[in-house]
Each structure stands twice: as C-alpha cells, then as structure tokens.
Length: 91
Image (cartoon, rainbow, N blue to C red):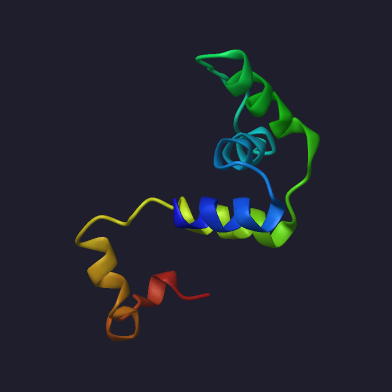
C-alpha cells in the first residue's frame, strides 16, 4: 500500500487507478475485473487506462508486490557464500 500511495501521489491519480493501470500493463494478466459500487467509482476505475506509469514507478510496484520467500529459503540466502557449490554444478 505504501508503494501504491506513493505512486498515486506522484501521478495525481487515485490508488485504485494506479493499481488497475499497473495490472493492465502486466503481460501475464489476461483480464482485469473492474468492480464498482456506483457510477463515480466506475468512472474512476475506467480512467486507469488513460495514463502511463513510468518504468521506475512500475519497478517500485513490482518490487513491493514480490511475495516473501518462505523459511528456510530466505535464511539460506543469507549464507550463499558459505554453501559450497558441487564441482558438477560449476561451469
């Protein structure tokens, strides 16, 4: 939410507009379901397609949405340099 809030403030757009815009530009997402309780919210959501986020903004949103790595994998990554690589894996 912090990343969405930040990008929304930079662009002057609403948080839902930024979120929908970001999703619309993801090649792995085939459709985005836009829901609305009233006409005002529908118009706000549809306006998500009317602007372009910068590459830096998209990168920040991508980074913020990365899933957390589960234990023990995050712990093992802390010690990569201590884990010997078998000779058969070296190129």
